[in-house]
Structures are given as C-alpha cells and as structure tokens.
Length: 138
Image (cartoon, rainbow, N blue to C red; front, top):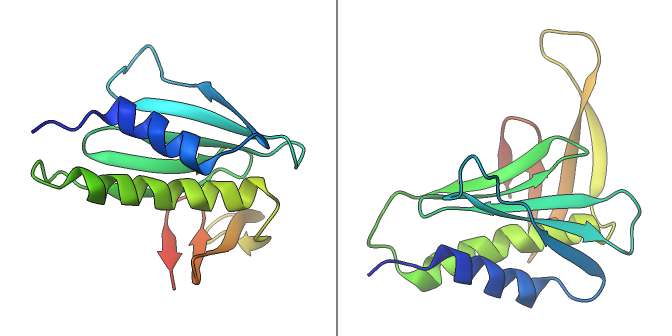
C-alpha cells in the first residue's frame, strides 16, 4: 500500500501548527516528489522552518540558522502511522524553535575561523541538538 505523503504532511502540519503560525507551500517545481511547507512564526520575529517530506526522507530545516534534523527510511513496508509519528516529531522540534524555545549557541568551526550556530531544544523530554551537518538526541 502506497502512503499518501502529501495528505500526511498536510494533516500533521495542521495538527501541530495553530493560528500562531503561517503555513505556506514550499514545494520546489524542480522536484515535486519532495513536498515542502514553510512555517513562519507570528510569535517570534524572523523565525522560519521548512518541513520537507518524501516517501523515503523527511526533514525539518531552520534556514536562518542553517541547521536541520532528518529521518531517512527507505523501507517501503513501513506502516503509515510510524512515518506519521516521525513527521510529527520533526514538526514538534520546529514548533519549539518557532515559539522561541531552546537555546542558540555558537560552536567553533573545526577547520576555519569563526563559529556556526547550534540549536538545542527539548521536546517530549528529549534534548535535540541540531547543527549544519548532524543532529543528536538525548
């Protein structure tokens, strides 16, 4: 059975993001198979998240920080509820950031001068640490 990713994305986004957020389509015309929505906070100025989903991959991207977290699952037999739960978890992380929760820290670059942002946010008793190239959950 094929999962309707578009319906699932819109259903979960509508459930997680209320009237405190503006949600708009952000699917690229270059790759319509990777659906996306842009969520803009009405509570915190200049906070945006992009939630993207396809049959094998989903992510939450914070463009102003250039950080993200994602889920890759190429298992075609995965249950729709499991995929929906993963997408909901990504949306909850984005919602916490958009509400002004979490801490934005600066981490020194490994090979070049300067720093890069790291977002630390707690969702459902788990601390998520997102940076440009990886993320961790504790």
